[in-house]
Length: 248
Image (cartoon, rainbow, N blue to C red; front, side, top):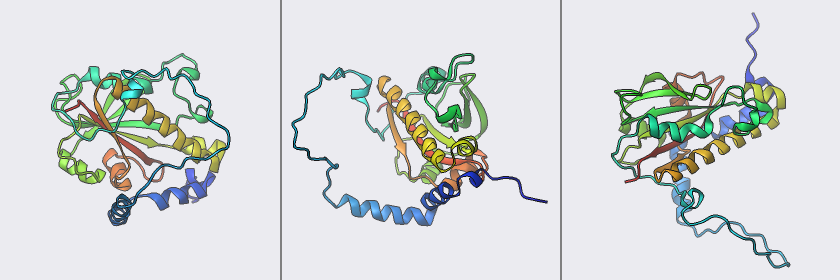
């Protein structure tokens, strides 16, 4: 009997690229060493040099605007987040039934390969009395319980962070890229990553508007994240994590 088709049949080089960048405990040790070495080097972002002078532009962003307030915060307060706060954070990801796709965050070919899962701590009883893993349903703007959530020290180790204060939520951006890769082939892999970045930007701006704290996480154990969420590693990619909660 022939094996079922794999989403990677349409983009084997993207699969190879992704596999080479996955983190395991052994690869994480190598990355930590590289980060430590880099921290000891002086660095400034690349800045092209051109002969012409720059043309000054008006800046409409005021100091109090959410965009100006956005930063990576790794410390969190003890206040509980409930349905109100989580509903606001996740609102940019919402799909409004019946509306044009142009009302949603952009997605190549309207394939929407990115999904959001949430590990919730300290939420109100309207969501869950105990910490839990939830899938975010963008059509219903709802959190669907999936599994229990491990204690923060356990999840922190899986994420590769050493923050003593737990966030109110850790959001996982997960890709199921089969539709995008079938339409665009290898180029579709780029679209998947761009879409995840758009989602991250939307979450960060919403958290900043709430005067809350948030931080992207890329140091997680890929296989362990997918196992935690009960997802098939042959179909899904753990792309990003985003921790957020009340500011300290």
